[in-house]
Length: 85
Image 1 (spheres, helix red, strand yellow):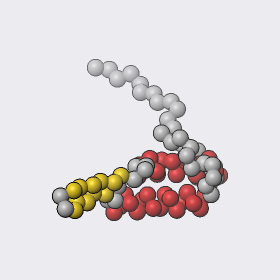
Image 2 (cartoon, one colour):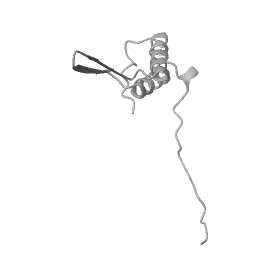
Image 3 (tube, one colour):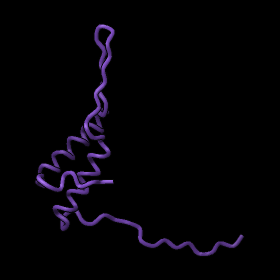
Image 4 (cartoon, rainbow, N blue to C red):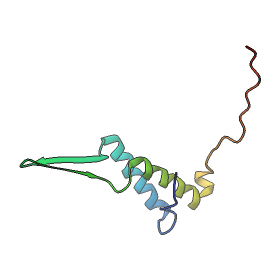
């Protein structure tokens, strides 16, 4: 769930750029880097996962520009009629 990390101090253009970079990483499979040298291995994970980054971007865009990016869609009522056995 988004925490609103990008809602203060970021412009819509900056958020769209972050979103594009996260999408690029996702498509290229660059969510975790690992390398080895001289018998030593190291891994590096980005500060936020791609999924978290995309979620934060979507939330920030809705907050900063509601007219363009709209409200979050949620199911409010779901009804299933009685199904006889």
